[in-house]
Image (cartoon, rainbow, N blue to C red; front, side):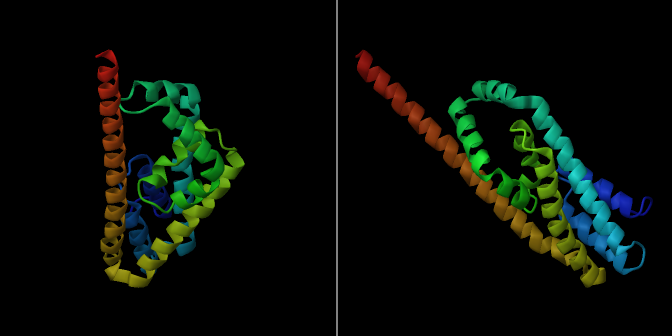
Length: 200
């Protein structure tokens, strides 16, 4: 941001989509603080960070589109404990809820980046994807930029609160993964036991 101004904030947000360890929850309030000091235009920050969000999402959409359904199914078939039926269930879910997932996913850590990939795999209409991504990103970015603008030199305080939110999301994801693995292992064990009984 020092060298490129608002465009630099947009570039950082684009990279955050591709490399989630770069947290938008730090970049956006900091950009808002810079705007409060007169170093950046507030409108330019909102425009550039939203453009960066859309650019990063488009890159991941392209990855999903290039990957395609057949490759996705083939990869899933090679993964332990994952079945092709899981992909088919995910597809059905995305068909019903994909628009909401893309819009609200822009406001959820981890999913903010990842949701663009299945959108690409399922070839969601590009105008719809762009509209939903832009709207969701604009809301998320505006909230954090304005908070940083309002807090001024205390802009970093928001990162502590959002850190708790991010950790809560990570905890839910971790529990969901553990529950999925445990259920699959249990079913696999029952299947082997049943097969052994039938052979005996």
